[in-house]
Length: 295
Image (cartoon, rainbow, N blue to C red; front, top):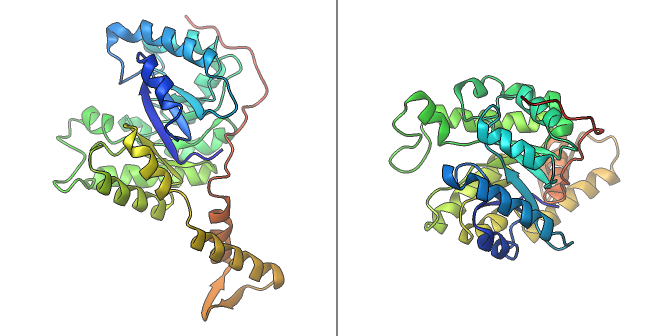
């Protein structure tokens, strides 16, 4: 299934989770972290467990769970839940490279694929290149522009026009390259101004232009805009098929002409990637192993 749109849904709002099934998102992220107040965490775990048990039909979107950070009391309670239920993937906040992924994989029985949020601490930025060591465990790689500035005392991650300041442009770029180096989907972060759908469309279009293959959403109204941005048009697909067919008809050729323009191996690779866009499957985890003991 495609991972174009991934919609956050508060884990303590079962009525919203039920409605979100029909919104057209490729995945729902049932959130046990930021969207849930501390006093509601236990209720959220109960609601997510119940929802995962009931929402098992072939036509539903993928169901991810964002847990609380590893090494915290709430994260430990989430691990106990994840030992009992198996969502389609786990979203791991405050991930710090391959070591965090390994820890989570070893701590959850029959662990599903993991989607790390890979830039939420200063140390995490320096570990982005390590995710290629754990590719079989990953559902993709994404980033965030909220926790990192808070962690270093920055006033904001954005300019007055909403664009990212230089440090967070860097974090975004490094996440993009880290995902492609690990050969997993690169998922763009959220667009907070959920009422500004034109701004969202432009932001998502830039994300796809730059090499992201999907994007997270914080509001149902964002889903259709994101899906459209990350879905190739019929014209794009037709051109890509022509490029692939041209090279198939001329094996061994390094450069060819199409419609009066030169096309070469990078154009072929881009065409093949475009045709595969939306056909990515969530990877299967490695062979099962017993979970490590937790204190």
